[in-house]
Length: 332
Image (cartoon, rainbow, N blue to C red; front, side, top):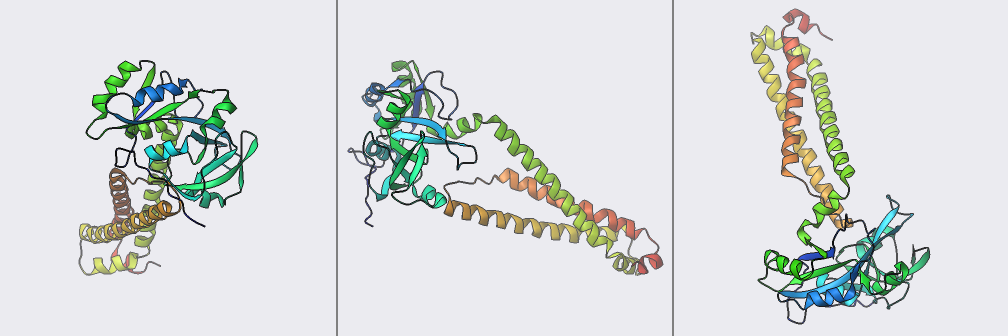
């Protein structure tokens, strides 16, 4: 099948990326549950402001999705040529949806994940929408449908939920932000680089869950390392008895065992980190997820693992070292 490209460049030249996200004042969260309150004309007025390169109005809505883990799915209502110009999208397969139609475009990663092909349908608004094309890269919601269709469905003709704003080269958000806020006082401006934090803030329970999960994982890992080293050293009581019979002191025996435990724990942690990086690479290949591995978390894992290994080895080593040499040598 022929591949069709859509240029993601503005007529003034150069790739366009949105730096600002504008929505109605008082909007909360990013879940697509807000009503459409911005008139379409606002996007046109924003585009006329000096320093603004491109302003594109979009609609976002949350719909039921039986095949989704959360039971909900965020969808975008867009004018695809305009949206592709500001988001850098290119059509990979098929064609653009027609206005006021029950047709959709999906990103290629979503297509692979759901095993979809052109002509398949997805149930949206309690009726089937036909997949007529795919695009790359993933941007915003995974499904794009005509803005006009979404407006009609929600009874919001002539309204949009938000505006993506790209600035002229050399113009910063700090420069243009106050001007836009003054010109459009009934709106809320957000830097696109802050959208991730805003999404996370909309799901406070998720942050708590992740922190608890990380804490439990760290504790369980430390206990597993401790138990493993404890068992390993206990089974070497006879070797410790030999070292003691040769004249090694209790602290010296404990130091030797602890060094060995730290070395084993360190290499175990390195292998675990490498496997995590490999899993991250695999996820990046087959999904649109971008897994962030924090250096702070890696350091915590390293410290907890080493402490667990040292404590797990030191206690049984010192206990065995305090035994009589004959008793240690007869240990089974």
